[in-house]
Image 1: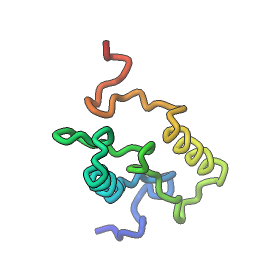
Image 2: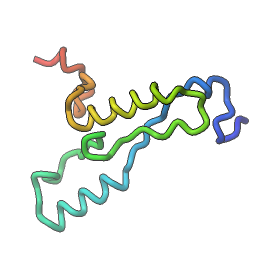
Image 3: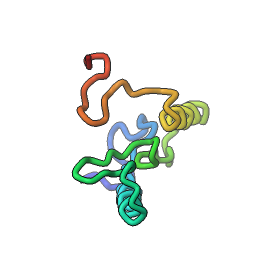
Image 4: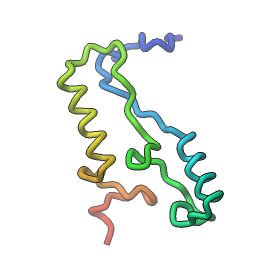
Length: 102
């Protein structure tokens, strides 16, 4: 069984991993309820975690031998996803490609 330290085949090629910050979603929903801000979460619906609402992020490169320029590009892309300057092209609610939606 491989260790949890990243000592598995191919680990040296992984630029980064994504982290889902469920705690952020829980905090956002509780805050919305307490503050009666139903624009954030009207209830009876799904709350989607994203880079934009700090619900998702990339991890650091740890010990991977990745050039700093490449990792800096990943950080730039993450920032552009958060501001909406880059779109994933996928509807976060349906999972459909946006180009397929009418």
